[in-house]
Image 1 (cartoon, rainbow, N blue to C red):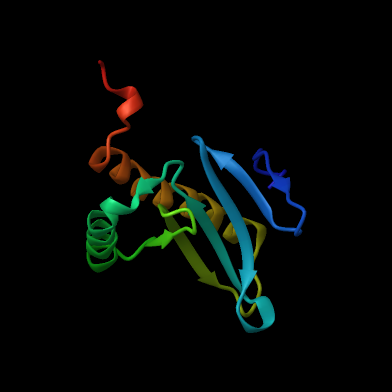
Image 2 (cartoon, one colour):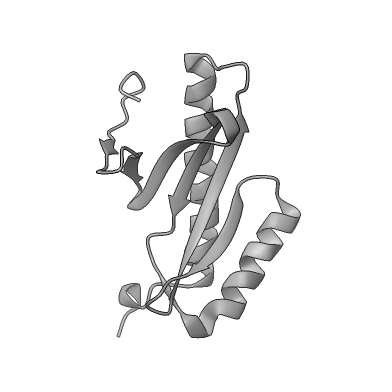
Length: 130
């Protein structure tokens, strides 16, 4: 990620992550043999549990109509909803630097599109004029 000019961190569990457009993303190698590269982002806002139906409907529609990214709702212990988007790419035979760069850029771009749609559907009350 240094080669493409991205700033990132490595957390206490060894996971690589970063902030893009105020949204938290992590990068994982998952699956048996860790052959799947995944870009996973979390929307930078959370919703009250009363909005669960709307959030589920939006994610379901997105997943039905579009190939990337997969998005889903997580209900946290505090009763708030977080929405996650992820793009996974299998690389059983390995990947070139260019392929990995493309996967990172696609993950950030397509997850960003989900989060932009969420911003439109659930406007931030702090941004509304009194």
